[in-house]
Length: 276
Image (tube, rainbow, N blue to C red; front, side, top):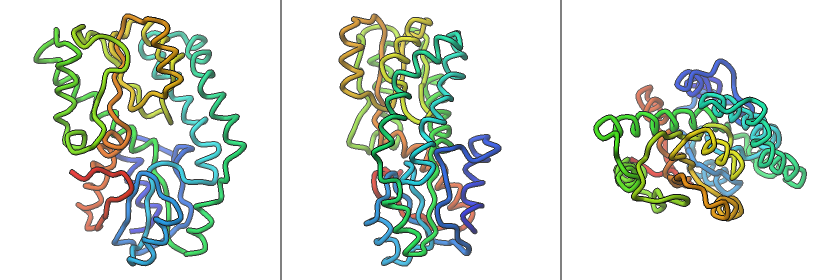
């Protein structure tokens, strides 16, 4: 298998026709049979892979080059369609998104985008990252799990949902657990939305837009302290659950890895990937 085929499998599993901006092949390669897969891969990870004779390395988060600098702001535009799907106007969606997206775009001027990828090129080890396609797989899994959970109890409370999420294999084995950051565990789940697969979460402004549109329970992988304080100050009568970054990312990663294993590829998990 080659690097292009590894990427194509992820695209097909997530219904992408083209590689999204936050995913990239940095060093291409052929005859790949043994892969090291990490959520975050740095130079040490690449050196480890070379020393242990892996044929290629796959990172989840963009480690450098175009996927790091331009990729996240570009795929964050996916928030707009997600918000529109629950009735938020395009104008309001763009306004809410730009608060966090603008900050991310401005911050990328300080990043050394060549730090990790240059090492991969020097080591001549095949290296790619797959971000949004895997996040789509994760979101689909959460959507399916929560819909199935609510189908048996449409009046379920947030506390019940948290208990159900903890039964997902990667979450049960991970160190970070789902938690209610905003809201009341005794309130009903109501109308929910899993806000994932758009580069990163939209922060407080996007969350407020969802709540204003009628979403009762919003699910993020994580929520920064600044955004938490903003939402807490608003005294919003809705719920925001965080599912935990590494365990959540691992859900989609493991589904993808199992597909590779079906095709005879050996994959070693490290750097945050919670094994099933």
